[in-house]
Image (cartoon, rainbow, N blue to C red; front, side):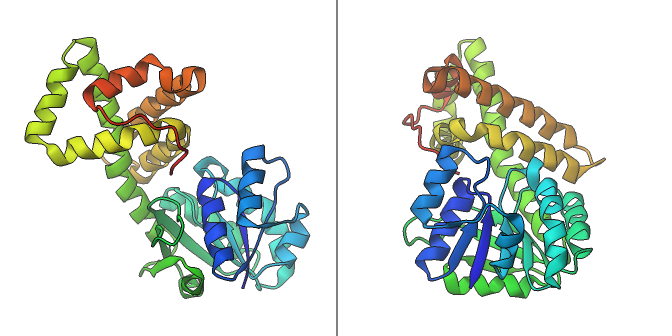
Length: 289
């Protein structure tokens, strides 16, 4: 199996590494990418092909694993070369985007004659020989993506067309990442009034599961908060006119503040001291997803 993974971010790089370890040939395009992306590609032993036509000509399957704001652009970028492949390359959009967004991408790819899969990734990047994340797949070609089970990915085919897998991904993230954003808001509010310690004690006493979730998750969230901004905006798009969509625009603003603090002062930012006072977990800086 020959697979392109674009781009080589933390999730894409880890998925590529798993595919390679299980025997697939994995390709990517590193033109304009950061040194961190290049290092991940090297660690995963991916083959770099900077020419888009040559990249598509080299593979059987294309996985788009990029930030939400880039998903449509990636589809538009590769559509012209996909159109010349007579439907031989499967395109899977595996991004945290709203169902309406993924349907727009499906239309772009469908016009090329290429089979399309809506993919939704739930869970962190695969590590070592763990089970890895769940890759939900929907759409007419979803069963073809299930071939990646043979290469170490937990692919779960869903009923429904393009949009079903993305809807599940965003509904899930609206709870997990939405709760984390609420935790930031609660922690900063408590700090402003000097009740951080009391909040921490009450949560441990009455909501131990929630306290544990936030205490474990907050430090891992800080370095990747910038990636959650677009995801929260996509959740607001997903909810549309339904009550509650505005909550996720607020969550996007929260993550934007966290991202700015991380960029400016790293783990020593005053904001993180306020959060840690309410959720006193071990401070970590690894780039987990």
